[in-house]
Amino acid sequence: MTNSNETGHAKNVAIFDKSIRFVKGYGNKYAPALARIQVGNLSQTLTAAERSLQKIKDNKTAWNNATNSREIAFGEFKALSTRIMKALKATDATEQTMADAKNAYRKIRGTRAKAITPPVQAVGAAPAVKKTKSVSQQSFDKMVDHLNELINTVAAEPSYAPNENELQVASLRNLLAKLKAKNAAAADAETALKNARIERDTIMYAPVTGMADVFGAVKDYVGSIYGIRSPQVKQLTALPFTRH
Image (cartoon, rainbow, N blue to C red; front, side, top):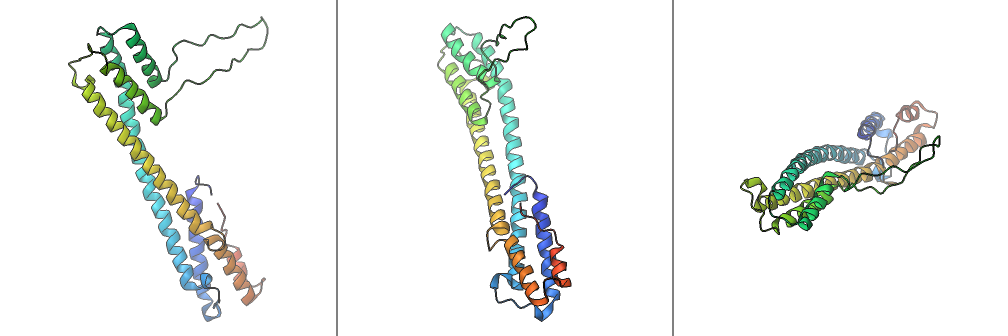
């Protein structure tokens, strides 16, 4: 089921609520033997659907907060990585150590070691397109790995001993732990949101027992009572319930 239009699901719930009000208006004539379309069970289905929509809203807010917090923290780390490199340059680090640090730093910043040279082409020819492999490794999981790589490199350099607290190895390791925690919190929030949407889709769109099929069964039963051309059936079929 698509999750791109939450308002569509809310509209379906409102329509289902309206259909219950209609069948209640039919009085004792609405007396189905099928349990899931009896008025009491229709109301229970409605309540479950309403709760599932609220759960999605709550989890969406939690996910937004977690991802925003993670984005801010990782942005601060990117800025700090430049200062780490400057501090390392002010040491007796070997060329090999600097090369290792630069490699991690480039991955943190999402840049290449060398600029791509455009292909040579004949005069008047259409511009040639050279396929290149992306070097961007900017996912949050990858960024944690890059920071860990950079920290390990400077930690192994005996002459790396900055006076600035935020550049010291212990502080960098604490930052790494903080970023890992924020990344995990965002991942957990995303999982909770996805699970809430699965729960919503099951309640509303599962075969037979879902709200959509239940609504269809209600219309069929009302048609059996009043006839398929009756005002009661037209009342229900006019409700634009849509599967998502």
